[in-house]
Image (cartoon, rainbow, N blue to C red; front, side):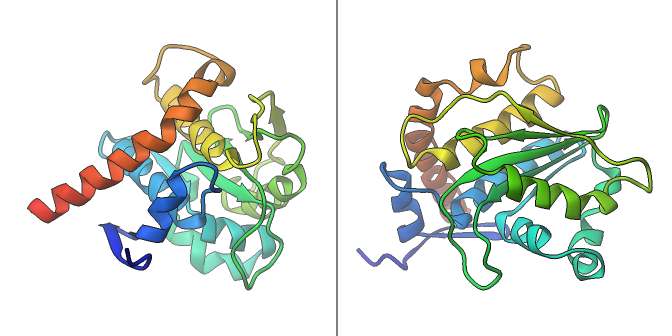
Length: 218
């Protein structure tokens, strides 16, 4: 089959067969899969009136590598000062020209607690890039207030070299669900279990094809 065949066009996300094939282990999730899932999660919250912003990997990469006025045109339209929760998928790629990298983690800003939370399934692998993102993002969140503290959260540890992206997305989902009280109180370790990690890939593939079928029917 043609790897460039379009499987799903979902609002601002476009997934091709080559992207969807990465849902089969032992592949590493790419920017497009993570961007799609972030958009899917955000739209579910926004339709319920919840003020959350999931920042896509391409914008997160720009946040990590640039500061100040260079970021303004990307971030001002997001109205981050109005959000209760801001969630980013952080990659360890240091290039501004190419996608890639070898590890994903999740950075969360919670306005109520006025803290950054960093969830990393291979901690402290992404500590430095996450701190870079936090430093660049803070002026657009703080309204001139004091420095935003940064906490490394105790997170479940991945059992292989390819599931960091799955963990990052489950950390993001956990953060948003727990923030808006859509799940019973539990720790991230209780939520991002190995069983849920193993099930996520097949569940997400079913979700993608279900959305594709719905769009075809429309």
